[in-house]
View 1 (cartoon, rainbow, N blue to C red):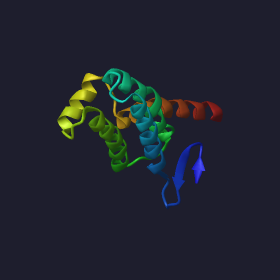
View 2 (cartoon, rainbow, N blue to C red; view 1 turned 120 degrees about the vertical axis):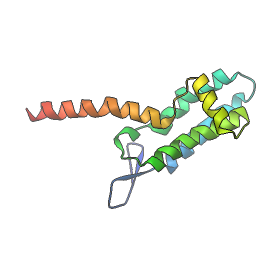
View 3 (spheres, rainbow, N blue to C red; view 1 turned 45 degrees about the vertical axis):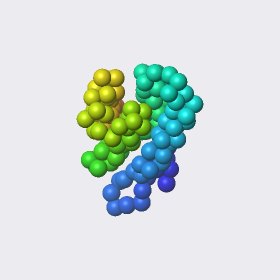
View 4 (tube, rainbow, N blue to C red; view 1 turned 120 degrees about the horizontal axis):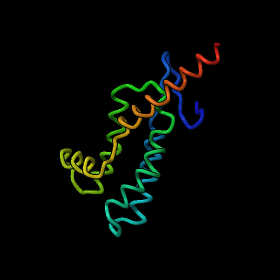
Length: 130
């Protein structure tokens, strides 16, 4: 079932299907990379990915209970793009490039957004009960 862009899986526990968000990230990142390719600098490409593609990848996931394997799968999507951009499979080089360009992984972004979102929900809930 799709609700507000998040695909909810039929299960005993509340689970979300990440296949569609990963597919949308790859589709939009490949469109950007296909249009500008190696004509522009890495900074420009990464800024476009950060502003246009990553929000599609993490949209609404701060409220979903994600397992560590789900978070690693989301991080791997970004790692694969870095591998394609810098033409290497060495994960140390990828991590160094992510630090150098100040590119946060989706797991870090989701954690930051959840830390902002959940206290606001608790405050709203407490105020509505009063």
